[in-house]
Structure formats: C-alpha cells, structure tokens
Image 1 (cartoon, helix red, strand yellow):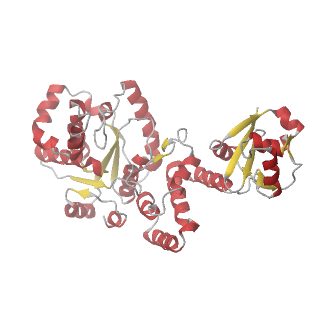
Image 2 (tube, one colour; image 1 turned 120 degrees about the horizontal axis):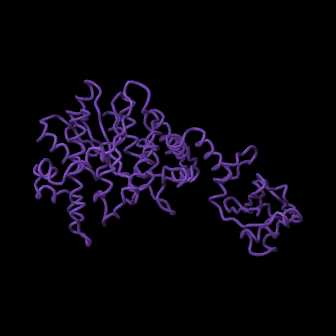
Image 3 (cartoon, rainbow, N blue to C red; image 1 turned 180 degrees about the vertical axis):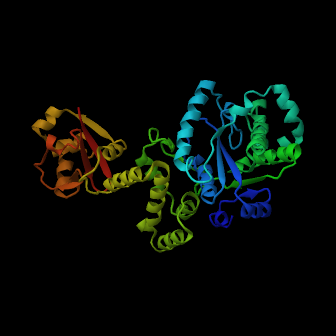
Length: 421
C-alpha cells in the first residue's frame, strides 16, 4: 500500500485501513476484469494488468477475469453511447486472444501464487433470468443504482441508457460475489470509473455472505489536457503486435509529454523508487536529454513485448534519428519502413542506376531536380543514413536493404522509402 500511494495508484478504497491490515496478515486473492470488446487489449487497459502484477510480486494471488458474459452487454462507465453488441463467436475469439496477452504480464505457472484466469461466462450463462432477479436483483434498489455516476452521466446525456447497460452493474457485482464464494477472492481492483460497480459487488457480498471484502480503484490515466490515455493520431495503441507494431508502441511512450513522463514511470514501470527519483532529477535538470522518456518506453515495451523485441524497437527508433543500419535485422527495418511514406520502383530501374536527384523527387523529398541538387550539395541528403554529397550519385540495386528497401533522408527528420517491385 505504501508503494501504491507513492506511485499515486490509489483513487478510492472501501476500507484502506482494513485492507492495509489484511495485506500484512497473509496473501489474499484479488481480481480485475477485462471485457473483450476487441481481440486485443490496448494501453488504456494496461494499468489493470500492471496492478495485478504488483500484487503478484508482493506474494498475493491475482485472478484476471475475461468478461465473456459482461462483454455481451457492455459497460456504460465512461461511455457516451451504447456499445455495439458482439456475437457469441466474436466474443469467444476476443476472449481467446486476450488470454494470450494476459499471460505476458502475469505468471500463470511458477511460484507459490500463480495467476488464475477465469471467464465470467462460465458461471453466468447457466443462470436463468428469474433466478438472477431473485438472487441478485432483489438486493439492489433502483434509487441506489441511478445515483451512481456512470449511470447518472448517461441518463442525462442525449442517448440515454438502455436497460441492458443498466444491468451491467448487477452482473459485475455477481462476478465479485461468485469469486468471493468460490475462490475466496477478497479484493477487486479497477479504474476509478469502476467505483460504482465495485461497491455494488462489496454490498452484495456483505448481504449474501456476511463476508469481508475490499474494493480499490486507481486513477484513470489521462494526458495533461485531460484527454483519454491510450490514443494516438492513428487510433488506439494495442498490445497485439499485429495491430500496433512494437516500434510504434515504443514511439507512443517515448513521445509522452514532459509533464507526464515521471507520473507514467511511477504507474507503468517496476523501476524502484530510487531509480525513478534519479530519472526525475535528470529530467528536471535537462528534459531535452529525454532520459526519462527512453526509460519509460523501454520498460513498458519490454513488459508487453519482451526484451528482444524492445531492443529491436530501440534500434528502430535510433535509425529514425540517424543511427547506423549496420547489422540491422529485417524485422526491425520492416517496422521502420512501415511508418514511412514509400514509393515503388522497379528492379530494372535500380539495376541501371537511378540518379539520386530523380530519387529524391520521386520520394517526395524534393520538389524539383534543382532543389534536390542543392540539398545534396548542402550535405543534407542521406542514403541508408549515410551522407551523400556527390550530385552525380546514382541509387542502384546495391543500395537496397534485404533486396527491397532504400532509405532516403533529407535533413534530420524527413524520411521516405524506395521499395523495389
């Protein structure tokens, strides 16, 4: 709890003093839910996984929950309109995909406290509607439910709130009740927008089981302007490398705003207090050196994609800042060129030699051959990050990397790729 406070990871707790005392006694079981609205989690979901990992490293028993049942409804929390309902087949596919991602952050095999993955469809799909109303619904007043912030916000909006989504709170409460009863799960964690749902679960447990339990929320992670964390110009940043390349994932974190980077280091990484304090001091002294940004991007990319992939992402980033291409892997180069504008050129053209001035015009790095010539003479043109000063230089097939790509650069940041066909 001291570590969570230092990292600003506690928004609300049903009984902070009681939870702190309970954590000192013996390991407890806790859970966090992930609704499979997509076949990949994104960085906005990452905090829940990181919280479970923190508790696991402290000796507790994490239970990640894939919402195969609640995913059919859609949580109204933080949403301005109702989600599109998914088919059973879509949900099954998404749950299977998310399970693989959860295995990357949590230890399901070794040690004395392995993680245990559950799917709430397993205990929900067999419950009849009448049984649910009788055994769960009767414990909640509509007055209490409509006073929850997530419900009030939607009811006051233009689209309103469907009965389907209104029922979500009861389903999540039923999850906590079931896990408390069957797995002795005493704690649910989630984002601060889940507070109403989590408290509903603690109330159901108290009424039906007369058992102790706790709810803990962490602050929703936002950017400095208050906008949603986890979005880039091209959309959500996914944990699936096939949806968001590890290079682009790394870039998302390395481009963190200066005002947020130390906060993100505390929340998303497992660096020690001393290591983060040292980075904070360096950042305060010289933010332009970007030591804190690089540490954040490397740590989170390693956490999600593994050390080797993170090393490749760092190498790809170095290339984009003019680093040498010697010994670069094809996978790393593919990540780089996938983010750059490209133009196709036939192997025959490169075989005969294409004037560099023509190549710069074709790639869109120069408006005319004359402008290209001046850029070359000024020392601002590079082939595969090697400076070129010979106006008569031709781009040939010998310049291709892996027989396919030629990386052109003008100045420090203007890149383009010639791709052979």
